[in-house]
Amino acid sequence: MAGWPALAATLSDAKATGHSPTALLVQAAWRRELGTTERINDVLVWRLRRMADLPAVPRRPQFQHARSKPVAAPSVRPAQAGPGLANGTPRHP
Image (tube, helix red, strand yellow):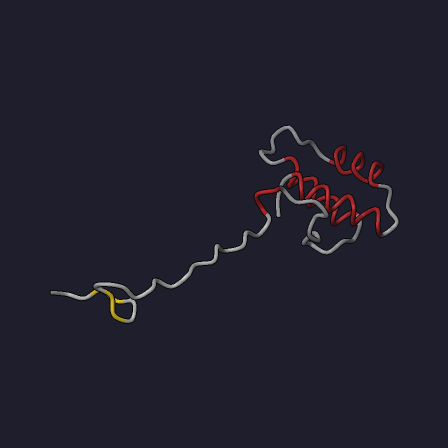
């Protein structure tokens, strides 16, 4: 899990364990420079989880994007036997 959802989950986990998310985030941001990183959120997650003694992998975020929800497979009816079909398989002349 990377990016914004991981950062949000990490801050939520930190709060749940008694830390101040705001204070922890400020400390993590000022600990070392962030200007040369390509993925600031990932670096902050790594720092925050170690500073708060949290497990390396964040729990699943409470919110999800609409496209990440599972989609039910459409129901499909088997083909009915008709002319040229025997047990659902085509006849060859």
